[in-house]
Length: 169
Image (cartoon, rainbow, N blue to C red; front, side):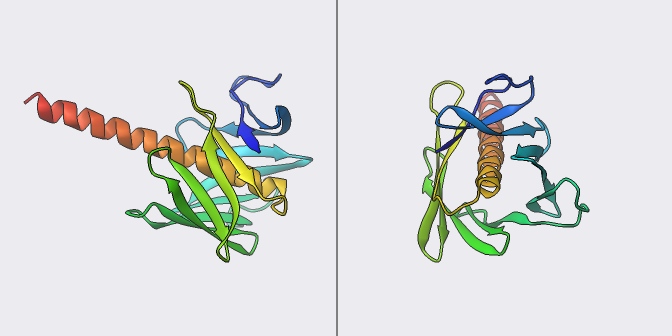
């Protein structure tokens, strides 16, 4: 299982999020706080994850910006479903739990990964993936979970603020 570590943890600098497997770092993610973009170092390769034309994409850092080896786009806002393309492998993303904000990743109806959370006051995303999924694809899905959790947190904050403002007039 992959877990997004605490920023600056596991010997990394501030702003760097270690990607841990069984407590040991296997990659590092440098995610922007206010933009849906990040760089990831997986093995000896640097990846760029970014939002481009309504899609979340992943490419090697050395490739042009219009290349997308990995991509995710929202299929249904109301159902919270997404479609992902992992280098030609189509993946459906479904809600596993609306309450926990977790997702199930399916290829041809078979589960290849499921997200979770570390829990506690500052929950961080986790990903339990099938061994057939390469590490860089797992890191992309973990980043997708980070983006989705940030979006959900922002939506809840906006709804709470609107309710407070509406209730005080």
